Length: 350
Image (cartoon, rainbow, N blue to C red; front, side, top):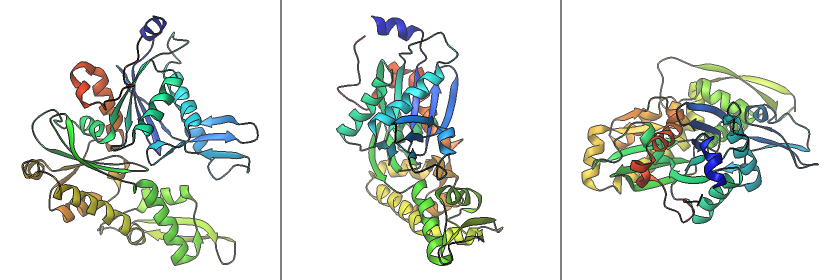
């Protein structure tokens, strides 16, 4: 009864709980939060110092006893208590301007496809402990497909590639369900690591993770470009131990990222090979949709198209597809309930 009363003053929210970023969709308002999934903790006192963007600013710049950590690894909860605190922070931030002192919203959370029951339970429990009165789970490829406005409930095949920070999800969807899917633990974070490794091996230059990510955004490409892109890479010389900078261009980035990009393209190809032929015919006609932050990597659509011999399209605003998908389900929960992940913990009594 108390949950019902508090719920009347709460906003239903959809959360794209990503390895790199968390996006929060509020029913009736759209996406209101887009912050890094980072939490800064003082290990001496176990006190949480910052969450989100302010915590990301601390990465690599803190004393030894302050650790800026990501509580999610490869899209699943690796630190339960910190994930709970992060979710509580986002739920309270959504309700700052409302009259709800103890928000008890209904929450839909995107999870990677193929996670274990234990991993599902960890996400649900973290959300409940953070203040949710009802928790629903949806697989991220399904949410991304809904956010990209694909006809997921129709008897036609739709193929989506959702490339985030920790995982790349490839799925074929038809009649409100995932027909076949493949989850690859190689995505944005792996591409950053590839750039760090490349600079270390080729130039004896040690780069920070944030520097590598900025290089990926500025000059990253996995296909030959017509115009050269250049950026400055600053790090520590592994021979002298002194600061050093080099010019980093798109050809160097292509060489660094080639292995992981081809692995992703091969995963898409293998998924197509395992797809029923009738659905393959639909996908050939409609094309493959790229979503997630990885969709912004230059040339990835052309590389996948070359491997699969199918058209590849980048979704509108690919970064927010999963969050927008959870929002669509929130708006029409009765008709779209079939796309949710079934779980004995999905329903909570009032």
